[in-house]
Length: 363
Image 1 (cartoon, rainbow, N blue to C red):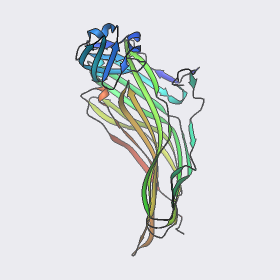
Image 2: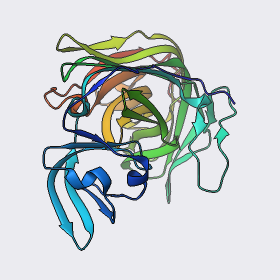
Image 3: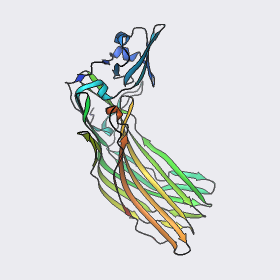
């Protein structure tokens, strides 16, 4: 069995003095809630925890929490907690992972053997998907494919209890095509959203000294958009295809964030076809989203979107006219406080590249 995931060895590390790393037998008996940890019977070293201490566990339900209140009642210990930052647990240390997600073991279901996704890359054909289907209105995907193999590179360096450097970078080859058809017998304006695929949560644990650093990655593909028409008619978005070699994410060093964006993108487009006599249009976006969590705490994300849009207008002065464009963009953002409580949030558009449609005259 081969798992294409390299995780940096980090045998040397220094924990914060108020950190408790839970023993496996204690962690297995704990009840983990959103803001509370509880255990009945022998609590081991947890019995000595005080407000302000930090508790970390590799699972079965990974968590990193700061204790704010301790209660003991009828043989049960309950800790009221808030999410902690990695710098609350680690004084000095380094961790690195470069993960080929589609070659990692699929997270196990109780009673089932461990499996590996036996595919070269994620490849979906979602042509024919109905986005809106109601009386007098149909919006459907007439062409839709996506092919992607995501690699996620995460690096973390903590020095003297502060984040010294960090990066989260998505890279891989992405190819997507999309086309949408509207058939309407009435005026309308509607948005739509459909999740095409979502991965299981891929978990990897490495150690800085004896401190487990649990990284959880999830990938999703979502189709969103909007369609509208002022009269009865048909709009065919045409076809838009993008093929990209991607490197997208962000890095932190010397107290500053910076974007990491190195896309190489080729587009193929064919303009839309209209059978409408007034205002009509459609926009559609195929989003690949990679979320990185640490333990049970939401962390940063990278979003890459392939999009296409077209609009037909009818004016008294100019008659029928239309615009159309296809492109690809990327954004980095999310919760970076898990890396260090004093960090400012960071949300940034990494790139937005596109081209106009080649026209086909309205009929």
